[in-house]
Amino acid sequence: MYQIVIPVDEDEARAKNAAEFVTGLISESGLDVDPGNISVSVVNVFKEFKAIDEGGNVKSKDLYDEDEFPESMVTARNLLVAAGVSVDLERRHGDPADEIVEYADSIDADTIIVPGRKRSPVGKAVFGSVTQDVILNFDRSVTIV
Image: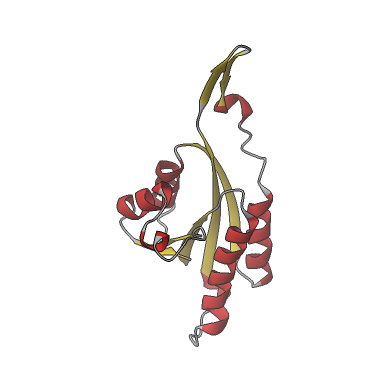
């Protein structure tokens, strides 16, 4: 089984783009790839934070719900399932890059497919901090789409 991790934030368009990249690999690659041999984990990390104001302390762990999946995760899952791919959803809390890499390592993922942000031609040479940390800290392939 080929295990793929797709980390997504709240942006549905980027999540859809990553899911379509995977389904495109299956249908357009010219390879005889059985979708049943691919498993995808769609991961969302609720970023850890602490805020202090006149009303008191607010901690991210007080707002985090591991069962509350953003619509972006559901969109990606639905596209992948329609293509015959096995999909699971994982919600985590903490530092996004650390949580993504830790999760991918824990399931022995073969690759991470990161949906990138739209950038200017010059900006495309620079990745966001989460993407850069994932690239630097995951010891297998990372694809930016």
